[in-house]
Image (cartoon, rainbow, N blue to C red):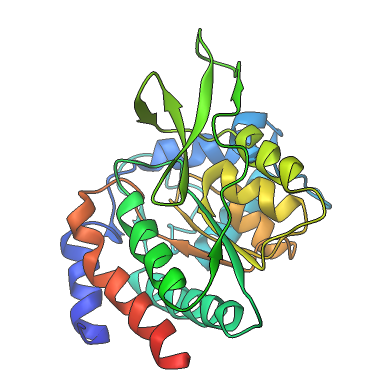
Length: 260
């Protein structure tokens, strides 16, 4: 496992953190959309208090490390690698706590099959190795969502839920698939959901303990964390080359393993 300094350098070099690829104007547009309660950016969460654009910007500066100055409207934006590492450690501790309980049940899902799936696969394998039951409800559940012209379905790859479109896993913000999974579970609830995007938001909104990953242009999960609906959110660029996530996944796996 890399040292903290080595991991920080890796995060910056691969642009998982530091000067990330998401432009400042995209971040600000998404912060404004969340403040205006655009469902596409709410990830299935409701907000118990009013969050203005400036409130969200201030939160994202504090939790993710984006530039705090509202007059910085174009060009480069940032994620603080120190915040990423701190959140990784907090996530590892939360996963370990769930796995240390009696007969733990976990659920995994991702809206980023081309990036974060690599992280979820290793965490799911770790959980199974430590005796967890990985729940896989609502497999093949189909629906008509917004923004596409045909049905999509829930499909699992090694117990990771994703959205399938005619045999291809697709990127999604939509909370509806996780809502369907929770509905099928009924009274049974996982001890922890590990997810991102609307999969994490819907789980947190349902009162299920949830940890997640989020990019700096996806502020909803950070708002959910601030309101106590999400336990831990790790700020990172959520769509770099999958192999770039290996060192941070190593840190997570090691953190969990040492705590058990």
